[in-house]
Image (cartoon, rainbow over all chains, first blue to last red; front, top):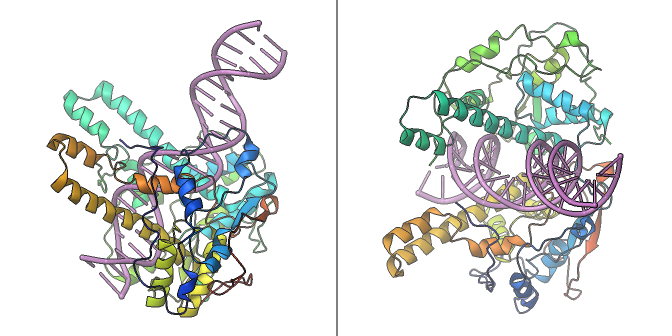
Length: 234
Length: 234
DNA sequence: GCAAATTAATGATTTATTCAAG
DNA sequence: CTTGAATAAATCATTAATTTGC
């Protein structure tokens, strides 16, 4: 059990730096004498309910306004506010069809190259970004797992010969019924970088492509034609 | 309590598509008649232990090789393998100093613009990527919380007047000792996109910058000079 | 029929957990 | 053992379905 939105007022305890700032930064820049705004923010009721969508665009002063004046100006006071597309992605039926086909095909955690390709393809059927694809697979995977778990529990609860206590324990251990998925994921899991590599391409992390025994023939470029041009789908 | 790495062998149940493929894709491309490799993968023992580091670079045929020939060629058979920088980031003392200062200043989950800036700044003191900054804050936040929780538990266990049972329950509710952090995070949490926006800049999600009442003077551009050039630090 | 109210789905984030390098 | 890196679980928040009263 966990508690959320626990309304507690407190004053910041981390204001005074416990170690000296790095040498190349003037110590005078790190003064914590103007902490009032932060304290006020903390005394504000937690997670105020905002029902009208415009309000969500309002800019709040980030909490770390006590950092050095320089860092503050550069890091705290600039907030990204989307001017358009302020609404969340709403996948079109066609997009969902493709995504589900890929999922049924076994795709679970596409790497960023794959995400780029999928995004580009799905961009033909509506606005979409890479993160939408990424999130879709995360959520779909998790929720399919949930569904399977529920179904298995239902099956067990009617057919199992286990004593009730054991059953209950098994239900509480939420890992016990997702072994199919776990198996599916296991050999796929070995260390990958997903969202950052390629996207944050780095000189020290240049990537090369390796072709692993494709057993298919020469029919290609129909579903996801290989176009390395910028996949900025809109 | 949770179980992980429960070794179970199973056969895929999701092989047959339950809905028709999208209209723009030739149905002939979606044949699931060659599922043997996938089934074999599923029967393989879970999470095979790979002890020698080279092995993790080996390219495995992704499990979704049953998708249409086109998608397969494009999405399955191409795997990113870093040719250099195969070692993980090792922060320099100066980098850590700056990061810790920012953390003490209150920064917890920098957005991608902030990450870019920090990366660029820290790049002066050694190789670093955005994801390193991102992960550092994630880990540091989590582990500081762990430390605080442990410390608080220790304090409680020696000073608390609660009966043992209550203490135990309180310990199990892992939210009970991090309310300070929760409060700190609560009003900060309102909808941000972290790793993807800006990075995967999208025409429909163009962002504008809004300056929220900076109460500082004109001392600036010393710690993180505002240079919007590509922050690919190396 | 048709909006307001409610509920169910699901997109988007954060937090917890795990693995492994050094 | 510490901590960088990655994934999975939990959670939050918005949109679509659905219900309900008229």
